[in-house]
Amino acid sequence: MTTAVEIVDLEKAFDPSGLVGELRRVVGRPTTPVAALRRVTLHVARGEIYGVVGSNGSGKSTLARIVATLLTPDAGRARVFGHDVERKSAEIRRMLNRVSVDASFFKKLSPLENLVFSARLYDLPPSTAEPRVREILQRLGISGAPLNRPVEQMSRGMQQKVAVARAFLTAPVLLVLDEPTTGLDPASKRDVQAFIQEVRDSHDATVLLMSHDMDEIARLCDRMAVLDDGRIVAQGTPASLAAPGETLEDAFIRLTGHALGDTTNRRTERAEPAGVGETRP
Amino acid sequence: MIAVRREWRASYAFVELNYRALKRYWGWELVWLVFAIVNALTVAYIAPGGREVAGEAFATDRLVLFLVIGTVVWAYLQQVFDSVGFMIAWQRWEGTIESTFMAPARRLAMVAGTSAFAIAYAFVRALLVLGVVSLFFDLDLLQANWLTALAVICVGSVGFLGLAVMVAALPLLFLERGEQMVMISLAMLLLVSGVFYPIEVLPDWLEAVGRLSPATYVLEGMRAAVLDGASIGDVAELFPPLVVIAAVVLPLGVVVFRTAERYALRSGRLKRHG
Ligand SMILES: Nc1ncnc2c1ncn2[C@@H]1O[C@H](COP(=O)(O)OP(=O)(O)OP(=O)(O)O)[C@@H](O)[C@H]1O
Ligand SMILES: [Mg+2]
Image 1 (cartoon, rainbow over the protein chains, first blue to last red):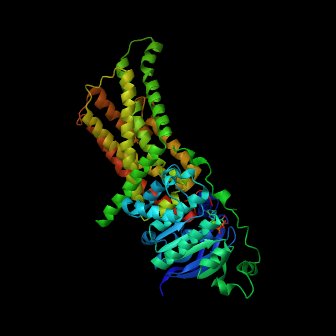
Image 2 (image 1 turned 180 degrees about the horizontal axis):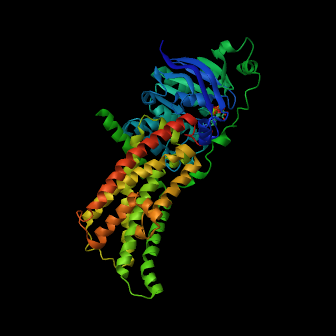
Image 3 (image 1 turned 120 degrees about the vertical axis):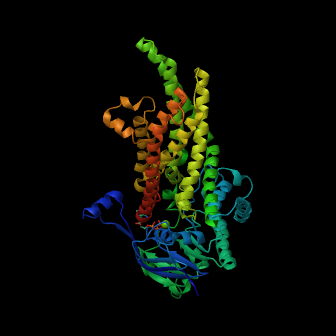
């Protein structure tokens, strides 16, 4: 069995003071950074759907970004199919795609234009990409005129579906999904979930899924980890983590000592664009 | 070979992206074009206005052309600087920066594609500005040496691109501050490059700074070519500084860009929120 994602003793902290912090480190008076991941170790096997649950701020997105080569680790090891995320990022980028919680697009461009741009970056010509975009979006319930209208005219949920399509379009071997179904209605949620399963089954893809949604984790994941304040507090199959008669939610409370934060759109306020995208310079 | 072709196609992605954004934001583009034209006209009218105010006879036509060259060349350089200098900031506003940086295409493709589009678009825009201004003034363009003008602008554009690439990386280091710094760099270039006056009129220290700006030599060369019909040989002394500036600034721009990206990936500054 090949290891798709190998994470050993991974550490990441953020210094909110930025370059000031860098300067202070140089003069020997470092600021105290915020720890986001503390000695995280996990292994995801090829073809597995691996879930990570945790409250807001527990480090899920940080972990997703490190695997997706968007953040360099402070210490420890992170490898994707044997490639180090820092030194071999080019190799990894060809194999991977990610859906983030905030669907991010060129807002005045249409979904089709956005996805054709993205496809070109993955060396997929529009002649291949376009039919595939139409097919994926059709399955997710988007077709016809909205494909050619600016993304900003779509609802948040629809934009999220376009973001899902962007990731699936490049047929990645590893999919990093950071709350991919947040903001979707129940039917759309199931559509996306079915799609994730299908991609795993038919393309032998590996999926790393960050979520607050225990039902989603229980339904999709072969194995899962509970992340709390940057630490992994439990790992195993969803069935093994919950004691007999216990729901996963109960298990989470037992393992972390607190309830999983309110799962309804807490993050969406932060995820909304800050209104500066209205104009171009 | 395959890799080169792949990067070539990825560069084209950025040409197409910029073109499509241009079409979708056409209202704004039009507004800025009108701005550039009005700016060129108001500056050009300083020449006849200056004669009225001073009450003396001077070569008004020559001054008009001197100013028009300044505004048109500046319209070109400013557009290049805007498109390239704000390429990172723009993706930040749109929120697409992470998905673009995560793609397998190299940053070089982003810089090359954006620059190619910027130069073509800026060139067309500058010609439009010139066209409208020439409706208002009787510009004598017959003795101009266009070959010299083209050579100067081509060589000068390389150094200017290098500067733009360098400041483009600033938003990776400083978030909003970085965008402000891009604006300020452009303003400084306007001051020291002698866009509307020979830089000799500046205080010595500013003149010295102006000698470091590729725009200074581009403007001097363009004026020699258009006002006096100078041949490439006549302005030969402008090329060594332009080449030296380009040879220093372009690689430096790439290094700064790389370093800034590495810093952004380490510090979590790639993204604006979260
Ligand atoms: N780019 C960044 N700069 C500074 N601090 C950051 C950055 N990204 C994350 N953090 C901090 O790291 C910690 C973990 O954040 P992270 O976004 O990984 O949590 P999360 O589990 O994804 O939360 P959520 O459920 O809200 O999405 C938080 O304290 C957060 O403030
Ligand atoms: Mg998150």
